[in-house]
Length: 381
Image (tube, rainbow, N blue to C red; front, side, top):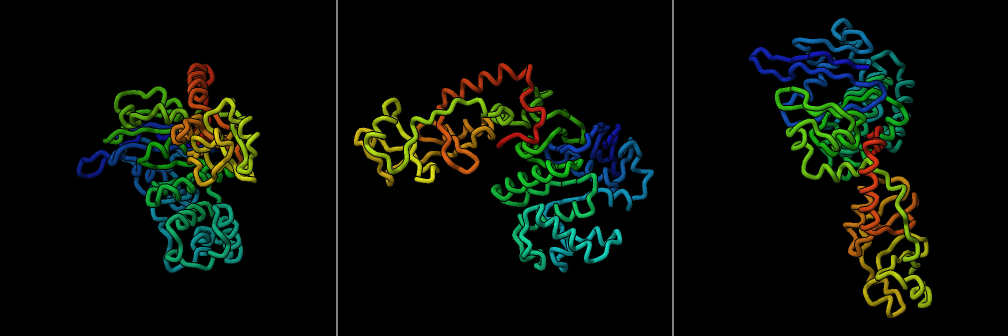
């Protein structure tokens, strides 16, 4: 465990970057520091590995004051990931990842073998091993940065806005990859971001900090969204925090209907039978994957015109995704119905906005007793 006890960082000009901060960062979890610019997030992170020394207070790592440890030994026990990866441009990818093991005295072959193992773990193709950083995309470089930080198997991983410089699609992929790696390795991760959505998705615990380096609230994401400590936290979470909270309610209990689903080659009789009680039918390909909703008039005509299909919005994965994902699918659908798919992308059923709303009401009613997501790092998108 990392314990931050009444820590202050005051610079010679009198500027206070962090003010009497106290936190207990649990082992094998992701603790996210979030807040506006200038609130001391990065300074706090850098004090943990002594890139910056605190002016007052103590930081304990497994009960030992970090100021009593040799700084090089301390830093080698912690992986560190920053924006833009910070790679050595003159070294190949495999040698970038092998940097810390080599510093620790590993042989070249052993260090490179470890690097190639980590390339696979973070989702990098083995063919990239002999390339240089400038030959990789931004997302690939960030994966290299994560692999390098993990190379010597440190128990602690410090991450300073590591995904903020990439586009939203790549960023989501990197976030998902981090959660997968954490599920496998169980590191103690301290993660800095200014993005509350990223904090809610990744964090086991989230520390919201105010300008001036003071702690506003420290709580699991579900509690943060349901019970902000004060007006500052509420404003920082944004007007749509209720929608974000739905990420912690599972969609597993939704009643899915399969009747309004037909294959693209359905007969007139099948169309009439399936569409007897539905204004639209979800049309799938022969492989069972959704293609779109039947156009108005197709049911009466007894035929499916593939080139007239309406978009089906964004599907959610049945039994895995959250009520937020289901609601999003229904809102994006021109019919007001969300499409559920299985893990292979095949249509598993459809569900109406009304049914989703009823599930949301039920989840809210049960939340005080059940605490729907005490493991927020598993929150679905």
